[in-house]
Amino acid sequence: MEFEPVIGIEIHVELKSKTKMFSSAPTSFGQKPNSCAVYYDFAFPGTMPVVNKEAVSYGIKVCKALNMTINHTLYFDRKNYFYPDLPKGYQITQQFDPIGRDGYLLIETKDGEKKVTIEQAHLEEDTAKQLHLNDMSLVDFNRCGTPLIEIVSNPDMHSGEEAMKYVEAIREIVTYLEVSDGKMENGSLRCDINISLREKGSKKLGVKTECKNLNTISNIKAAVDYEIARQRELLMKGEKITQETRRYDETLKKTVIMRKKTDAIDYKYFREPNIIPIDLDDDFINDAIYSMNKLPYQYKKDFKAIGLSNYEIELLLKDRQVVCYFEDCLALGVKNPSVLVSLISGDIMGYLNKNGKTFKDLNVSKENMVYLVNALEEKKINSKQGKIVLEKMLVENRDSKEIISSLGLQMLSDEKAIEKIVDIVIKENKQVVDDYQRGKDHGLGYLVGQVMKMSKGQANPIIAKKLIIEKIGECPKVNTNH
Image 1 (cartoon, rainbow, N blue to C red):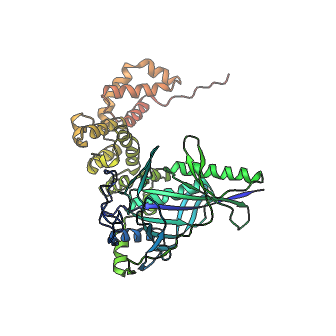
Image 2: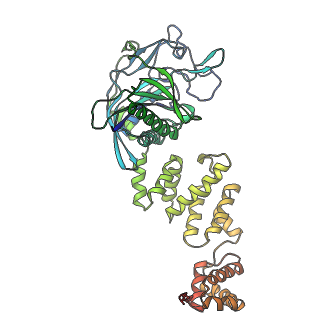
């Protein structure tokens, strides 16, 4: 019997507005416990919610990026349950009328482009953070009330790879829009993944399990793939799948049970009485949309148009700061975009990673970077010299033009000047020339190397090679048949 995996994902994205969803408390991460909370967050009697305008604007941008229909009236509802992380005894959310509906997202998989449809996106408040010790549990209310947008996909995915690509694409969108930092390790982006198996060809969904607490993109694929294999094995044995919540154990490389699920909990949703419906006028919605940053798919289209490969584009799109830096360099007249990609993804990222820095710590100006790339492209310096210059730019924060000049690194491209050096090298290496003319082709590289040595690395090696061949001829092919 063949089974088809069916996967749906709920993604919670923390919005990085300055204040919380319904209070004036700051949303700073990593502060002293309970220092970023006000009376409303602690549910003091008499305190009332006030809707965060910036968070609503961020929500509109996310909905637009996900091709959703945007609700022009803002409604909020109460989700009632008792839990220590929400002292009010309820969460304010959008159960009945979410801010966005009926969207989709295109993702790239090994089998090509795939369309994942999205049921809805709704705004709500985050809960407090709990810390469980051996003999007690502590609650930090700094996170309580942080604005969230929850994005709910339809069960359109069928593999760990598709689930991973979908979450990765959502993270790219929210970070490019700058509505969230998307840091899974900090809980800024969290996802619950529902996984079930059904007989191939059937429309009826199987019993699902839910995977929680996945804190890296790679863990999403690993958890989903493991859970699919686990469920398939049980079904092949004739056993039933139990509806339960599981987590991925990174050490054991498998999902483990957290708790069993019973019938759906009745949260007794009803309209939030302390927030009246808010009509969003066209100007407010359009202002949010018009102020959106460019999205990854738009950059991808632009970069393909200038001749970058898919691999080069993928390297750039990993970080919006890198993309913006690259785009600014293009505007300043960089002559070979591929060389720029290579330097950024190789030498620069290597230096930053080695020194525990991120791209925002880069101290190389775009003007200096463009001059270096163009110097390489115009053969003023060779690739080895380029690495020397870039290293000094990174370490010493010096001007690229000044480094090239002070070190005398300008490549010698004057044919007459190089020819004089070539003549000397040929004269001083008669045996190498004789061997080369008898078929030992490695001699050419040696002669070019001697020209480079005599010119202190400044001679253009392409011109040197051309002149040597003109003077001593092509290396004959040696007949090895006897």
